[in-house]
Length: 230
Image (tube, rainbow, N blue to C red; front, side, top):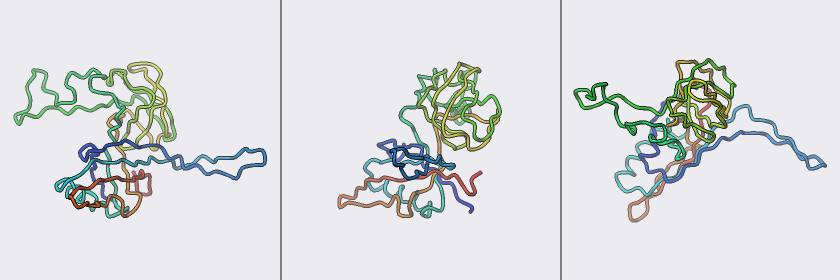
């Protein structure tokens, strides 16, 4: 299946709630006579999201329709900018540019007024195989601010931090879910997390327009974990 990836910026569409969590997809057995039960760990956990959005008027409704129609129901997928409200601020990580373009060392910009891009990222320092639940990073890039509970992504695969040991180049980040793909020092973690996700149903995201020509949107999204995912 050759799925098209569509960019979906939840902040652009005025997301009013953040509801992303890991669905472990465990299977429960029947309860025993003692009241004990069994749960089989799911071998394909995935992220699910149910964000709500603000009130749209004409222009925003048309823009929304154009994005949702490209999904072709559950066929194509979105690269969703998750925008965790608990992620660090630029001030937290000690950035003097506050997310704005970075100039050259002499303070000048390119001829068109643009500068270098700034990401809330930290490099991964060691190779780690798929299935790992910890990696070593250079936390100096994040002002050593990353902590338990932060959501980050690696190559569009989202994870949630559950602990960190050490600082700077000795920082070991622990997380869930286990790594979906092996990582190398060419990779990095991104605290402006992204997730490749499909609509939960073919009719998700439909714009129900009220008489005053306004619409209130909500979505149910499920992470794309395969087949066909690299």
